[in-house]
Amino acid sequence: MKGPGLKKQGVVFLQALFIFIFTSLEIWIRSGPGIISGLIIALVTYGGVAYGRTGTRYVAAVTPPLAYGATVLILTILSDGLSISRVGIDFIGSLASVAPYLLLSALYAWFMFLNEKAKNRPSKRAAAA
Image 1 (tube, rainbow, N blue to C red):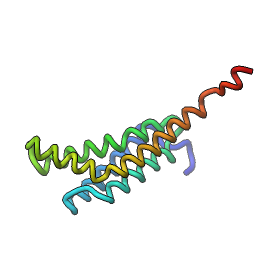
Image 2: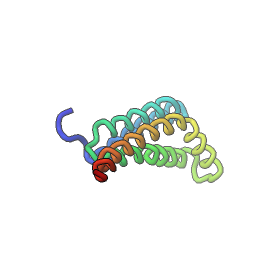
Image 3: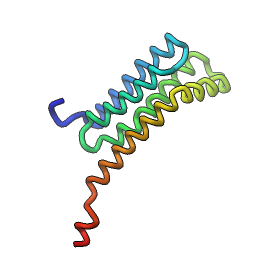
Image 4: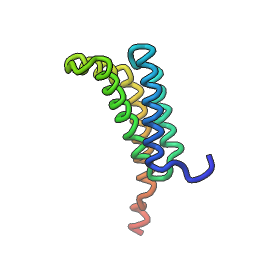
């Protein structure tokens, strides 16, 4: 990809859009999230880290779990109504079905964020000399 990469707003928009579209389709077709939603979470996390500008790694790490949670909560309320117990059970079940993907994606994104932050910090050896 030529150019400096995506800004923070671009990373958030594209991650949220892809998660919303594919999770909605999977819930509509299969009546619940699963492997497709998990793979999309992993792909958008990698895409946000790889194609974002310097300084966008924090946003790339934070957005996918929030976008997925918001999407599933909205779709659960639309399908189940406002029954708190039913919405709660379905929401927790949806989170549990993609938990390994969320965990691995979050570990990767936070590692890349902390690695970038450590590289930008001045060395203690250079400061001591």
